[in-house]
Amino acid sequence: MKDEAPEIEFDRVTKSFPRTDGSGGSFDAVRDLSFAVRRGELLAILGRTGCGKSTTFNLISGLLRPTSGTVTVKGYDPFAQFEWFRGKIGIVFQNDRLMPWRTAFANVELGLELNKVERDKRAEIVASWLARLGLKDHGGDFPHALSGGMRQRVSIARAFAIKPDILLCDEPFSALDEHTGNVLREEFRGLLSETKATAIFITHSIDEALKLGGRLMVFDRPARIAYETRLSADMTERDRDEVRTQIRRTLATGLTGNAPGDPT
Amino acid sequence: MAIAGLAVAWQIASYFFPNFLFPTVPAIAERFLEIFSSLDTTLDAFATGGRILLGLVGAFVLGSALAALMARSSLFDRYAYPLLSFNQGIPALSWVVIAIIWFKGIEFRIFFIMVMTTLPGFTFQLLDAYRSMSNDLYEMTLSFRPSRYDLMRTLIWPAVLPGILTAWKVNLGNASRVVVVAELVGATGGVGYQLLLQQQVFDMAGAIAWTIVLVIFVLIVQSLITLIETHALSYRAVSER
Image 1: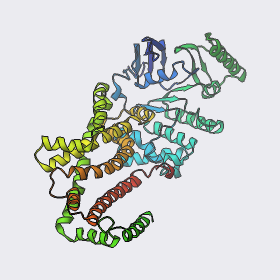
Image 2: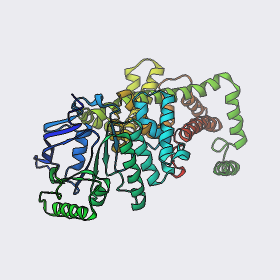
Image 3: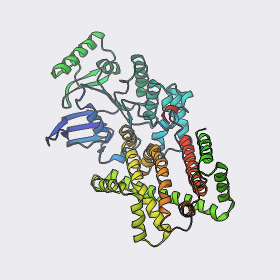
Image 4: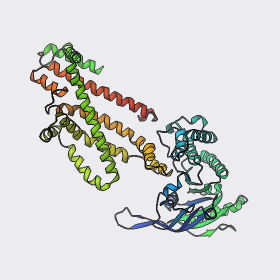
């Protein structure tokens, strides 16, 4: 039954935070947000800075509890049943967040270690991920000795190594130069289609969202769906341009709308 | 080189001043060797070293517990912080008087004085190390849903270790100054006791020799801490150590 249900579901979710200006009030980072993500789907969430993308991300990962409404991931509450999700959710953050006291190998190993995977098995998995991401000869290096791109590769390997059912990515390539970002994005797409993980990819770049493909949602402020579309592989460049224009318009004015002939 | 320069300057001064003010360097060296040629005085030197280490361990354990409570509870922090700040202002000599009035056992008096004088330093430094731990790393580790023990082992302990080592280095210097005062509470051995004896007989060479014993002990422990630091923090770029 759980397989048929959406992998991730937001039902009228609102998340408020107290104001820090001393006024005693609160503000909504996410307001009345509802959406569902199917198993194996790739959803890109696009929005301006401060539109609540990261709050949505933290609600899915169980780091925040909604003020009202319900968030369910694989049929469970990620906040209340936090430990049930051990080994099921992998996260790639905007910055690499590598532990400086661990080598690249040990950083990739972290999730496996916390999931109590046996040492020999861990070593095998880590070595294979380092090799796949071109870091075979850098397993013994500490983070300070790696370039920005290599560090982000390590953090991608760390997230994939636990073989998560759900992968959450918070602007993982935004701090990298364009070339490295493109290379890693391609690798990331390949890994996703190989592992069949459900993925939510947060970005503020329209081009990145279009390159990723899958389903795309644009958030208004506070986080509400202002525009939604599905990008198919057979879309023409002209269709993509139209989507791009629509997204730009939505981001600029907050207008809602659908992509040509492809609403979800 | 600097120490050799100081010895030369001292030796020159000894030619111009009476011996009870500036004893010659060989006379000081002789007294220093005398200390370690007698079992009783050697034990005195080790007793002081032991008291310093025991006091520091006591303050470290208590300081760690206080820092953990202050980090977890803002209510506790609100009460403990001013008390520790107040404690920081109390001179070691006041603790000597309080210890003499409150406690009977000499060793416990010394331990109490050592703990009370180094406790605020340890607590504040450990609390600071905990609070300056990266929130990004905390969130990242939490995303793997670790147990409390695993969170402690994989994140908190390695993150606060540099702070712990710094706290030990700073407090070791404080403790070596305080222990001499603490040993005035009626101790019948130790560097403080021996310094008091040298003062009573006006023996400057002896006083300096005992002071050097204490300084050497501090330097040895400092070197050990540096060795641990070099090994434990080897992950850092050389420029960051």
